[in-house]
Image (cartoon, rainbow, N blue to C red; front, side, top):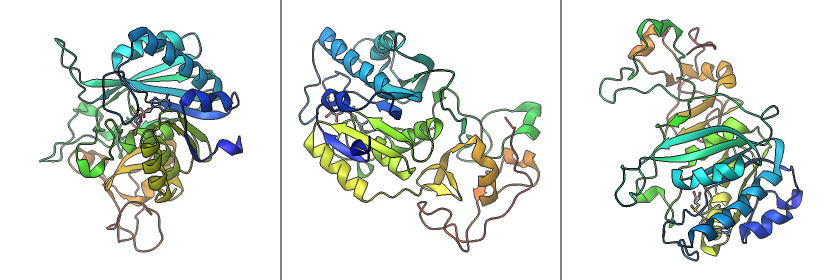
Length: 328
Ligand SMILES: C[S@@+](CC[C@H](N)C(=O)[O-])C[C@H]1O[C@@H](n2cnc3c(N)ncnc32)[C@H](O)[C@@H]1O
């Protein structure tokens, strides 16, 4: 297996997948071409319906074959294709979730306005599947900082960081600014993949993406100190990915816990890590005050607990009595 690790293969996905041993990868994530006439460099994104589905069936079966018994399979696409993918996957693996990623998509004729992508989440074996509950920050009014959700009489039960993530993801946006994107028509946001990886793997595990594009999955894996395998048939995209990998180091963590952040905000943590991470936040003594006060990362004086979050956290981390587990 070592020969495949931490490499990008410039190849057709099926050719490389066929060489990878069965039951060897912890997480497979696929974001295939949608067959929607997107303008790729070398790929014709407009093939016949049945031809497209027959091809999808081949790589989906390969993804399941290479995934470990404890592992997970994720596939991102528009709902139309996911309905067909599910019928293939239901024979090969175990359904866990249809994650609805709230992001506007292209209208296809006279339709309701499409506004979510789906991410199918299958386990190779439900009883053995590796899975971690994850949390995201409370949603707040941008002007007054009040919590958007009404927790009624349960405010004392609030988790200081934020709620458990559900199967609807509306807090992660598509890449809007050109300065944050590569020359690729459908690059995914890094923190979307970081969330998936934090939820389904541990440090040192293996993450595989057979359509790696300009590298979102493998960059996310490297930032979180996982091993990666990327496959992409376009040489320009492979070059961009390799260049970004050279500049990426695995230190997206607070203390000893891996986290995902976007700009300067932590966007995903694992629930089991909160007991360690809470020490790095300033949290109101009275938990009810979370209502209108967002918790903040304490500024650091020494140490290097937030090595990748840029600048600014310059004073010592404080221990907070308000932090404990088991909350909504
Ligand atoms: C939807 S994009 C993936 C984008 C990627 N998730 C990212 O964030 O950059 C699909 C990619 O699959 C590549 N591709 C298409 N057919 C392929 C094949 N048979 N084998 C490997 N890569 C392929 C395309 O060149 C394209 O970059």
